[in-house]
Image (cartoon, rainbow, N blue to C red; front, side, top):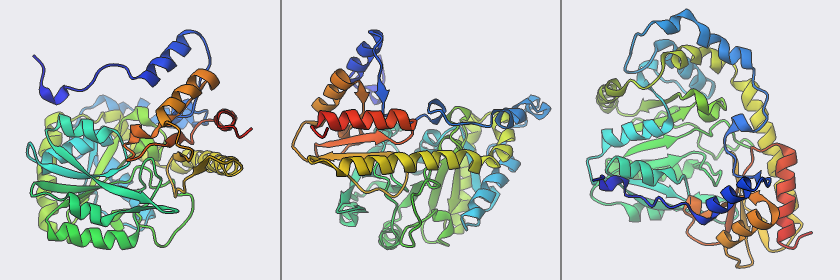
Amino acid sequence: MFASRTNWPTAVNELTRRVRERRERGLPILDLTESNPTRCAFEYPGEAILAPLLSPENLRYEPSPRGARAAREAIAGYYAEHGASVDPEHILLTASTSEAYAFLFRLLADPGDRLLVPRPSYPLFGFLADLNDVRIDTYRLVYHEGWRIDVESVRGALQPTTRALILVNPNNPTGSFVKRCEWELLRTFCAEHHLAVISDEVFLDYAYAKDSERLGTLLREGEDEVLTFVLSGVSKLLGLPQMKLAWIAVTGPKALVHEALLRLEIISDTYLSVSTPAQQALPHWMMLRETIGRQIRERVKANWEYLRESVARIEGCRCLEAEGGWYAIVQLLDARDEEAFALELVEQEGVLVHPGYFFEFEEEGYLVLSLLPPPEVFQEGVRRILRRMGGE
């Protein structure tokens, strides 16, 4: 009765079940997996965010497949601040980056074709691939006092039906940026094998420090050899996931960019999923970027420093280096089972963390923590984790 593409396991996993039972008993949970900034006690300029939604312009429906011109101009202005020049006509609005991926998978791949994705990374790639009838192969991110792309694993994963390479810059959850030396190799590789590049840059503004070796947005690389699609949106950039607005910016060889945009326009016109109020509001919201982003950056940096300093004082685990994003990774060095330990933390300490398998780590022994929770929640959660490890 149902399509095989949705034949996913639907049983609730043990960690989710334990959390649900604890909440049903009225017991508190320190949630160190929280990735929704609207639940993390940031001060949002409410009136400024909501005011443009009351504009009479929102009562008139004038659908545009690429999205409202004013919104696309505001996005182009954002990239100009990053030193990149992009024509607003090369930008297409979507309701989310997940939808942007779906549009691009449909654009680039026939059923059964393949895409290269990083590992570890988002758990959503598998679901998006299934829903769009494509297959994914992974390339490795390896850690040696810092994360790097294993370029040889990219080459090794290539198949005749591979259509695109996905970069997450910076990656989630490793917080690692693509390095310029890595990009030079990957750019040549993609050009030789006629692969498109999808660059997911939703965490681009959340770097911990400057680094000249790091790749910024691919829009400013002046690259015309490889067809490239850059993704971002207000969910991370403005901490407003509920507003459901993202975009695709296209760069590369002129003829391919032109053809890609024509085809994307038809895909977008089929759905017209972006609401008029969000499009009309975007130029106003983009002016609030620093007000909201600064709070998130300061919170993330403070929690990151607290975690590093706390973990450094005990044996049996270490905090892996990161360069940006909203997540931190703690590696367990004493051979304990990550899932069993995560269950133990819920049951005995009332603390929720992600076991590494959630992000497709190749090996056991990783915990992933969100850096968004308020400091009092985050610090108490970290203290309980380390106490459970025998550090206090």
